[in-house]
Amino acid sequence: MVKYSMLLFLHIITRFKVSYGGRFMLRNTLKTLSIPLILVQLLILYFWIFDWEKLVTQIGLITWIVSIVLGIVIYLLYLKLSLKDKSNIASKRVVLCSTLLTIALAMGALLIEFVKSSMP
Image 1 (cartoon, one colour):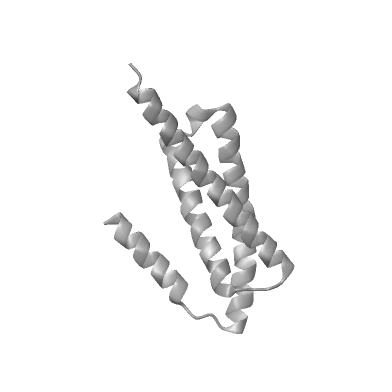
Image 2 (cartoon, one colour):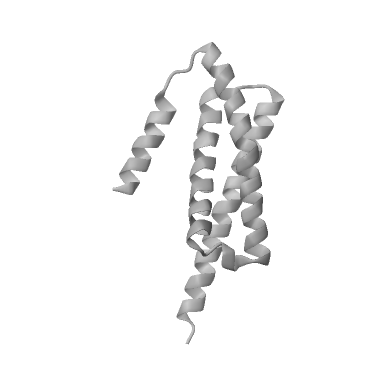
C-alpha cells in the first residue's frame, strides 16, 4: 500500500505544470528546503560514524527515511524545473549526492545488522 502511494505521489509531482511566476517561487522554495535537508543528511552521516545508537531510535529512523524521501522529491522537482543557471545545477547535484550518501549509509547499516544478526 505504501509503495503504491509513494509511486502515485511521485507521479503527481513530476506531472504538474509550473507557470513562470510559480517557477521563480518554486526555485526559491527548493533552495530554502535544500539547505536544511543537506544539513540533516550531514548530521545523519555524523551520527552514523560517531554515535550510531541515536540513529536506531524511532526519531532517528523517521528522520533518516524522511530525509531520503524529501531528497528524492527535491531532486525530481529540480529535474522538472530544468533550470540552467549554475547555482541551481550545483544545488541539484549537492542534493543528489547527499541523498545518495544517505541511501548508501542506510544500506550499509542494514548490511551490518544482517551480518551481526547472522553471527552465532
